[in-house]
Amino acid sequence: MRVALVLFLMAASAFAQKRTADLPAACGPADAHLTIGLEKAKHKEPQPESGKALVYFIQQQGTHVSQGEWVFPTVLLGVDGQWVGAYQDSSYFSVQVEPGELRVCALLQGHAGLSVKDQVEVLHFTAQANKIYYFRTRVISIPNTAYLFLDPVDRDEAEYRIASYPLALSRQPN
Image (cartoon, rainbow, N blue to C red; front, side, top):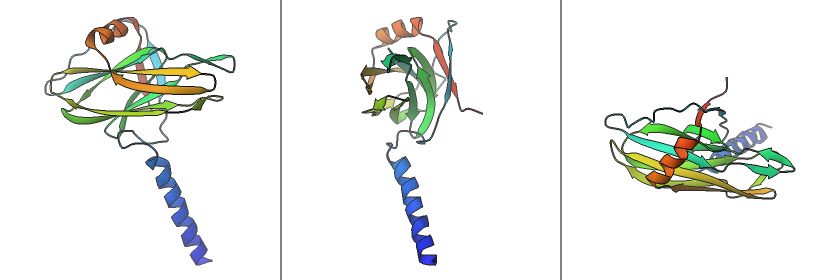
């Protein structure tokens, strides 16, 4: 009986490790969920804090129809293993980061009736102090499937989108 209990605990531990190991190291915890609000009021866009880099994340075209209903996919964004924010629909947010080589992760969270393929995207870049970087996520869907894309975007394109999109405010639910 004792051997069976030890084997069960080892298997449970291995299962728990496998669950988080499915996400790349750039991502945050696999079981994270953030609540998201959209603020439509125009904001003065921040500049990098002294000695830091500023990274903008922009979600472009985030709506889909699934089983006859509009769905607004949630995309979580992580930097070096920590979730830094999330958004839905067409929106954006920014985060201050330390300079250096950084790993970025985008994770598409599924919705009922939507099976998600290619739900994680990762990339890395070298951030320089006092510089601004722009990344865009796009979700493209066909019936019952969604594909997530994460890529750097030109400053002019980013500024155009930021000017017309609401600011996404995300936080851990209470």
